[in-house]
Every structure is written in C-alpha cells, then in structure tokens.
Length: 428
Ligand SMILES: Cc1cc2nc3c(=O)[nH]c(=O)nc-3n(C[C@H](O)[C@H](O)[C@H](O)COP(=O)(O)OP(=O)(O)OC[C@H]3O[C@@H](n4cnc5c(N)ncnc54)[C@H](O)[C@@H]3O)c2cc1C
Image (cartoon, rainbow, N blue to C red; front, side, top):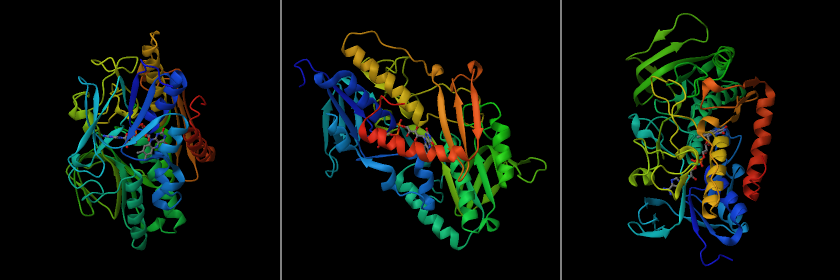
C-alpha cells in the first residue's frame, strides 16, 4: 500500500530508458510510492530489430509486447496518452485526451523522469522521409513497414540505392546495419548486379559513428564496404531530396573499386530506393516546456538530474551529451539502447535515494561504457569500449568481426525482449 506521504513518480516514455527506470524504481521503492509510466504507444518495440522488418525477416509483432500487462504485474500504473507539455513549476504533465482533439488533462508528479527519446526531424531537409517525402525510414515500426512496402516495389524494377544519415542524425549504427543487411537482401533476391549501393553520411570518415570511431573502426568499415562493393560518401550535407534524386551541398565520394576521392559539392545522386536517418531533436513536449537545450535535449548533472529542477531527471536519447569528437558536417551524439539503460538505472536509483534521504550516486556520461552488436546480414561486429564519450581516456576499444556478431544479435533480441517483458532489469 502507498503510505500517506507516498510520492508519485511519473515516467514519460516507456521504451528502453523509461521502462528500465520504472522497473528499477519499483524494485527500489516497493509499494511505498506510486510509479506511473506514460507513453503515447501501447507497446514496447525492440527498435534494434527494425532493420530486419523491411526485408520480411521480422514483423513488428514478433519484436514488441504490450506495456500495460507487464507494468501492472509489477504494480506500476500505465497511461497511454501523448504528453502535450510539462509544467515544471506546477509539477504537472499535460496530456492530450485520447480521441478528444483539443482536450487535455493533467497528471501531477512529485518526481518526473523524461525518457521521451528523439523527435526524428524529417523537416530538416526538404523532401526527406516517408510523410510526403521521397526517402524511407526505419526509426519506428510504422516507418519500417512502409520501407518494406517500398522495398517490395523496388525489387520489381531495381536500380541505384542510397542509405545513410543526414547532418544532425545520431543513429549511424542503424544506418550501417541497414546498408549491410540491404546488400545481403539484394544478393538473396538475386538482383545485386542491378543495384549500385551508396552509403551517404555526415560522418567525417566511415566508422566514425558520431563518437570519433574506435580503434581500427575506419579500416574495418572501409574494408567491409570494399568487400561488398558499396561506395560511400562522407562529410555530406544534404540540401534537398526530389523524386529519385538526392541534392548535396557537400560530400566526398569514395569508390569501393578504389581511385581518387571525388567532391560532390553541389552535385546530385540518383536513387530508386533510399533510406536516410534524419536529424534528431528533443520531442516537442520537452522543447515547448523549456526543459531542453537549443535542440530540445535535457541538460542534466552527473546524477541525471535536470540542471534547474531538482525533481526532474532524464535518461536515454532525451539527454544532452557533449559531442565526444569533431564532426564538421554535423553529427548528433548517439545514445544506444545499452547507454539508455545505464542512464535510466542511475536516474532511477537517484530518484529513490532522493525520496529516502540517501546520498545520490554520480555517473558522469564520460564514465559510461558501451557494448554494441552491429549486424551485417549474415555477419556482424561485436563492439566494446569502456568510455564511449571520452575517446582520449579509453583503455579498452574492441571490434570483433565475424558471424558471431549476427548470432549474438539474434540471441540478444530474444533475451532482451524477455527481460523487459518480465521486468527482470536486475539482469545484465
Ligand atoms: C533503426 C534503429 C536501430 C537501432 N539499433 C540499435 C542497436 O542495434 N543497438 C542499440 O543499442 N541501439 C540501437 N538503436 C538505438 C536505440 O533504439 C535507442 O538508443 C533507444 O531506443 C533509446 O531509448 P529511449 O528510451 O531513450 O528512447 P525511445 O526508444 O525513442 O523511446 C521514447 C519513448 O517515449 C515515447 N514518447 C515520446 N514523446 C512522447 C510524448 N510526448 N508523450 C508520450 N510518450 C512519448 C515514445 O512513444 C517512445 O516509446 C537503434 C535505433 C534505431 C532507430
């Protein structure tokens, strides 16, 4: 039972960061305080497997589960609604009333955790994205399904393909996974010779990932590109997309076949199929509430606590992290699922400690490690570094290529979905 002075902790966002935090808080606080998760979606989606959806290797149902039953089994309330804004002075989250346009209701909190992930900003490049634009996306289950329909259409009449990440994007790992999976899918479909594949990225070099790369990352990525005959364009700034054409302000073309680099400033690249990850911003509800920086990401201290409001914490992609390495064309800082979980665990422990009058535990972002599985169809790379956001202080940087990268990702998918569905966040 909730005690009379029980606190209400509201978690906005029920994905990697939000769901991990909710389970962790319940473990720490038991029934002494109330935990509520709010998400506009009713299902947890294992986003890393969305790269397989367009090729028919997964369906959204296979990689998702309903949030409400999992949360209610643990005594956590769930509200399916979109937050319109947060009022940090009045300590309320303003929710759109589902099915009643223009109507809102308020949920009061004592502590708030912002775990709202990114707003994928297709508007940053005219013509980008599946909503009225000409490129596909794999950032949500709906986008991945639409990318699958376009893929099936493409296979009837193949041609040039562009895959990449625009200036301001963060999820470079997903773009790499997608381009290697797509190349494998072309071979399986027997149409590889009919499709020239080009990877286009704002990164200054292949394998940069928005973090300055890891030891041997550039060599290994370039070797992979040459091995499977994918050309790559670095330092790209996209100007606009028109039907079948990407217009570049700048970019440097590297051919898999070798030869001199070529400037693509002011040039165009043709495509019959394109999947481009757009720029990332904080979500509108956070941007409107004045809780974020100029791009809408929440600035936190070493406890994942908001710089101004002591009862607001943040975790995951919604957190502002200082760029660890230069990226002149503009890379946002990537925050992977694992990193989101680490942040959420510390933020949750610190909310619990704050409620119970115990000391908080610091975890500077420069101390966060990273474990990553990069899938490439029937191959993959296992990546590890002890300090992802502090390149100069890293002691460990490992990249292990081979089929085990692919097998590990499949095993991890099953394990992680089970762990989150059953709330066993104490497991690694
Ligand atoms: C295609 C793809 C592949 C990826 N592959 C990998 C991988 O292999 N490994 C890896 O570690 N990471 C991967 N990532 C990154 C990983 O998905 C993110 O790190 C992770 O999803 C971040 O979790 P999060 O909880 O911070 O944000 P999100 O997962 O984006 O979740 C945010 C949640 O907030 C909710 N929300 C947002 N705004 C509101 C609002 N106003 N009201 C109510 N709810 C709201 C959303 O519905 C969502 O459920 C990949 C990402 C993509 C796009």
